[in-house]
Image 1 (cartoon, rainbow, N blue to C red):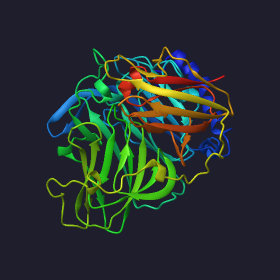
Image 2 (tube, one colour):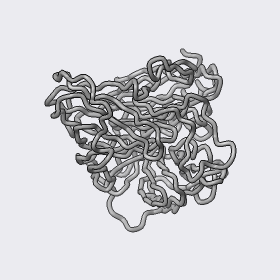
Image 3 (spheres, rainbow, N blue to C red):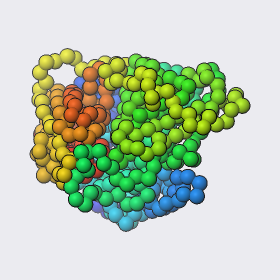
Length: 457
């Protein structure tokens, strides 16, 4: 056995049972969790992650030292089949405490990876075993949930393969978008980020861990359909994504299937995921580009290259049409494939939450309270909960709820972007007991207080 400390081992022996109990969902028939099957005891996939310091090359000759999973950036891609039991051992070889959060997966509470809420932090030199079911199918992420460690490079992709995709495809690519911080992340020393628009001293934008001059390549053949899974685990960057010479058919948001909608570009906030299918009907070599919505850094890039074309690189300076015009995806255009909650004018419980901060403030708050000095949002099992969010700042706030999917308009999500001076609302069923983190997925906003705990009572 790995060097699991005694306290951690005793915790695992009892808490792993909870992940199996959660597999037999008590969710509302209209909740995605209601389609989670019981544990597949006979299908087990084991993964080992070591969090340690290491070096990574983000462009030829540009190597920097940071924190990594298994010496990789992003961390190793974890693929599992829907319903498999995943056992992931995390060895902490870092100088600080750490955890792993399985972003978007409605695991049992003890497996969620939030220190002080769902587990004790994993101390240096010890290990922890995460044991849960890989379900439902979808594009998910994993990352540290300690401080600003996410912005050091402790991120990776978790893909749970569906048994029967609702949209066919021939190739499957995972695209991890990130921001490049060559120094250790720190909170602002003085006031908050002015107007919410300032960002840490990022030195570039990354696609699958590479700067634009080392753009990765995605190969296709004419007549194929390529699935691109866009994931944004970045610390503080909202991206607009487009592919030159091609339109994108959006098939999933946050891992949940939707009726396909064809667009030229989409915006993906921190913590969000979008799957698209692209018809390979325009031979050549084309630029896939992810530009910052708020910043001025050069866009992250990749090359979509046809193997049956003589062209190996896009024309210099090529910019996808979707970044300068065309149809930009609106969340209101999407409609879930899975059943939605029945209409109700009045939920069992409602929270009206005001998001504010920035300017010269030292905190980002929800209803004027900065976590951890903030009241929990108390719910009861089986209730239908409505959360109404009003953003009174000039910053983008991607709000993420752990342990649950929620309904926004006509789709299921786990992370929703609240635009500057804008508002949104979502409903969810309290079907996964425990204490769950709810927070802005801008790592700096979260660390400066924009978080609450949803607590079952």
